[in-house]
Image (tube, rainbow, N blue to C red; front, top):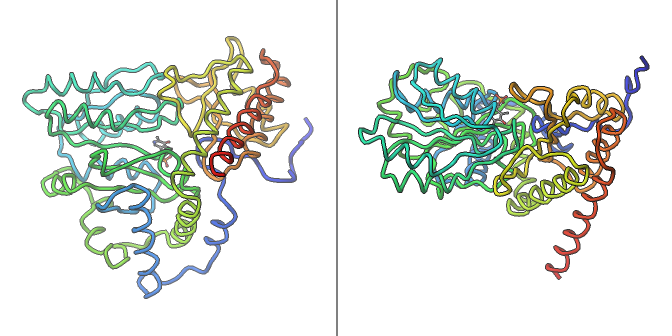
Length: 401
Ligand SMILES: *Cc1c(COP(=O)(O)O)cnc(C)c1O
């Protein structure tokens, strides 16, 4: 076999829904000498990134930063707020919700896992009904994944909050925004979320290695009596020292340089513009899928993700074989189908450090790959996306004028 890309020219297209392409500015920021994490310079950096993350979470409450993958922040959310045997309500939106549930079980929690078909978000009415039925308030927390990265389906967090309020139930509300924060609108305070979980390598445009909790006053109060064992993840030591910009153990100094830079980029563009940009990429990608005649996994248009689109492979065709073709011929990585969806879907990541032409290149690569792999489809998806991008760009400029 000819190694087509043993020395590829140009950039690899990392179009998986995280880790995402890291902007040059962020890479350059990371490429600075590591400083004393107890020295005076560090305190300034620490304070700045903690304040910046509050803006991204849209919260006045506490935020902590861990040197870990997102999975660590999942664990932190649970072990800081709950006790062995506590009942937690979770919903099977897809692979990531299932992993979080498995973790909760391993930690000694009881989990009620509402079944899902991996094509819909969380039904707020179902949560309302379950909480209303729980007269004894046995359920201690409701956990939701905002953007299910395995499926490209979002859940309406504001509607879930409303359902919880309407039921008058006191459960904590925990939300995984690992693949949505910094790409889709999210409001920790306004939506009354108690613990928001996030990670560095998706919308925040950083390499993997940082994770976050935003913590409501109610969650903080719960941590005072929560009896699950915790040490590394304990909020207490973090929150005691964070106000001075320092950490209880060695932080990921160079990733924090990157975070500082990424936050500057997000704020310079403006979060609302960042969200609008991602919405356009979602729309354009779905236009492409429709033109190809391929099925979008997400069934409910109100729940489409701005961050990724999972496309269903026609019966009898392998999504993984197709992805291999795209990687070999065009040096582009697409997301694979996870667990139940293995080999059945491919996922187009359209988040993070991208512009219109990055998306055009991505969709052109998909379309050429479909042809080479012999996947039945109609041509013209990339063109349909280009039309959408051009039209919406003209409309936006006309509106600004
Ligand atoms: C990526 C992701 C995770 C897992 O994060 P890691 O950094 O791989 O530990 C969890 N939840 C969602 C929604 C994700 O997208």
